[in-house]
Length: 419
Image (tube, rainbow, N blue to C red):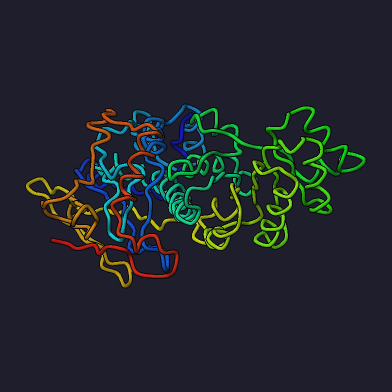
C-alpha cells in the first residue's frame, strides 16, 4: 500500500518551490531528535524503526494519487513529473529500535537530495512519535510490574491501525502479549483474551455464564468475577472447577483490597494455583501501587496507548546540513525556544563499570556506538526483527543506572554532551 499521501501538503509545496529555484537536488542531511523529554521522564525508548523502513519502501505515488494531486491543483506539471518517478535514493541511519534516547539524541539521520529527503518528514515523524510514546510509557510500566505478566489491551482506545502499532511497541519493551489479533498475526506476538461483563449479562445468571465459558474453553480460561458480588463469584468459580481454574479477573473497585481479599478466599477454598489478573485503567503508578498485592497479571489499555499522559515523543525532523557545491554547510534553526545544532551528528553511549554515564554527541570516544546503517543509496541493508529489537532494548535498559528505575519525577538519567 502506498503511503505517499500520508504527508502534509507543505512537503510538496517545498519540493515544487525547490524545483523552481534549482535547489531540489542539493545534497542535504536531516536529523530526527527531541529537544526535551516529557516532564519528569528520565529516558525515552525508540520505537517504530521497522515501520519507518516499510513506509520508505512504500513511499511511491500511484496513478490515482497523481490524478488527485493534478486535478486538485496541489502541484504543477513539473512537480507531478518528479513525483511520478519518486523513489527514495538516499541513506538512512540511526539508533537501533528499542534503544533508549535522551534530549538531542540523533535517533534517525536521513541523507539525500532536498527533494528526496524532505518528502519523508511527515510519515517518519508520525510513526516515530506515536510508537516511541507508547514504547516509553510501556518501559516504565515494565519497570513497575517487575516479573509479573503485562498484557497490552488498548485497541479500543485508538485508531484501529494505531492499535496494531501500539501492541508492537508494547511487546518491544517487554510486554508479554496483546489482546489484538492483527498484531498477533502480523508480528507473532502472543495473544490473550477471555470475556467481558456483557458475556455475563447475556446469560440468565452469573452461574450460567461461568458454566458456559468453562464448557467452551476449559479450566485454562479466566473468569471475570466482579460483575455482581465478587466473593460469591469466586466461590462459584472454584466450585465449578474443583479449584483448578487458571485465573480470575478484577476490573473495578479498590484493586489492592480486592486482590488481597480474593487471594485469601482462593487459598481458603484450596485454589492456591488460581492466578489473579487486574485491569481497569492501569498506568505505571497504579501498577507500582499494586506491587505488594497478590497480583499475577496486569492488563493495560488506555494509558499505554496514549503514552501515559504524553501521546507524542516530541520528535522533530530538521535540516542540519547541506552541500553548496564545494563544501558541507552546517545549518540550524535559531528561533526562541527552538534552537538546534547544525551539522551531521555522531553518537556514543559512554559507559562506566558497565553503566551508562553520558550521551556523547559529535565526536569519537570510547563507548557503545549508537547508530547503524539501515538504507544505503535507496537500498535496504539492515532491518532488525522484532525479536532482535526486544533483545537490544533489554541490553540498553540494563546499561542504565539504577536511578532510571524510579517513577518519581527527575532529570534525564544521564546527560547529553556535545564535543
